[in-house]
Amino acid sequence: MIPGRVLTGIDGVAMDRVTLDRVRRRLLGVGYRITGTWADAEDAADEALARLVGLEPGSAPENPEAWLTTVTTRLCLDRLRRRRKEAYVGAWLPEPVDTALLPSEMAEQRDDLRIAVLLAYEQLGPDERAAFVLREAYALPYAEIAEALDAAVPTVRQWVSRARHRLDTDLRPPERATEAVISRLVEAVLAGDLQQTIDVLTADARVVSDSDGKVNAARRDIVGARKCAYFLIKAAELSDGMIAPAEVNGEFALAVVSRGVVRVAQLGVVDGRVTRVYFHSNPAKLTRLVLPEGFEPTG
Image (cartoon, rainbow, N blue to C red; front, side):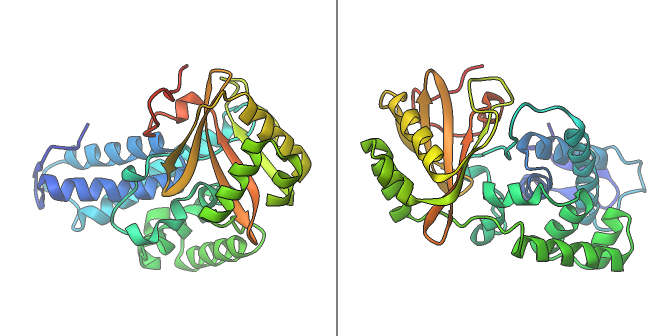
């Protein structure tokens, strides 16, 4: 692991621990936005830093941070393409993380770190996604992005423009759930009121469960207000009161234990009604969350 060390021994490169931590957190932000997986972001950021340490004397880049961003981006694209070729059981959701882990360089602009937004990014092509992230989240010049992606500047501009258009139209992610909407849904579900629960949902509401087949979970999305409402009420009945609030990716979430399985639920809203319920159930993806006592995932 690189964190905690000082980068020395390379001509023109010297980072104290504070600078190194800031740079690494920035690289994690780049990697997480591109891959949607914190583990991949960590691997890529640490490998990029290790490569910088391993450069031959006299070969240090003029701008180490730009160089690290380029290397991290390329490593993340490799991981993203490789992951998309791997088999995954059921729906795939971005890895949820504790809000405290999120990059702090743009704390007031973390909307693109929400699960719904990262999931929308999944529908973009890898290069298109990387170009959009580097431009929109970090305001990098097109020429620098083009170098990172080994592409022509006009091509990068086209990728960013196309991604922006799609995210504003057919891939537009649901909005954050307000406290009022959350309260309405939770009260209806806990009361076992089917009609009241239906009324909080959009007609095309969808429950998405990510488990990779490692725990008992729906492998296909549950679609439609009535089916979703019935599912949510049954899930609450099986929880035996094991429901507690949590904060994930800067948003409110609910930790639920149902039949011994830990799940973390988040909501997406359109026009004041819940249109998506994301259930994170894959225990391998719940390791970077701070959950209430008794809610630790197993498996």
